[in-house]
Amino acid sequence: MPTKTITERTLRVNGKDIFVADTGAGPPVVLLHGGGPGASGVSNYARNIEPLAENFRVIVPDLPGYGRSTKGVDR
Image 1 (cartoon, helix red, strand yellow):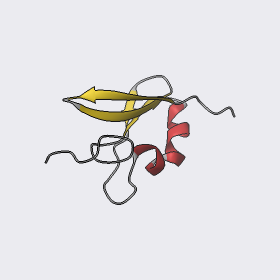
Image 2 (spheres, one colour):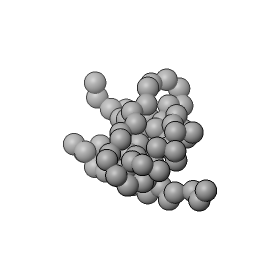
Image 3 (cartoon, one colour):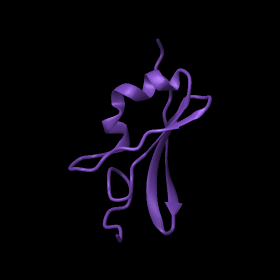
Image 4 (spheres, helix red, strand yellow):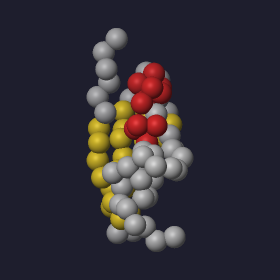
């Protein structure tokens, strides 16, 4: 089974950079990760993204302060 291409981009939201990975086609599914040291969307959901992308558009952001998104966000 071929690996799906994951598109990576950074979106500017209220002056902060938010990293987003996106793959697949169909109804959207957004995977939101939890907190903790080293938390990021793609690393937390590495085993789930490709199987879900067979039937859905999978959108995986790094929440503010985590992964490749802006650090030091205001509470």
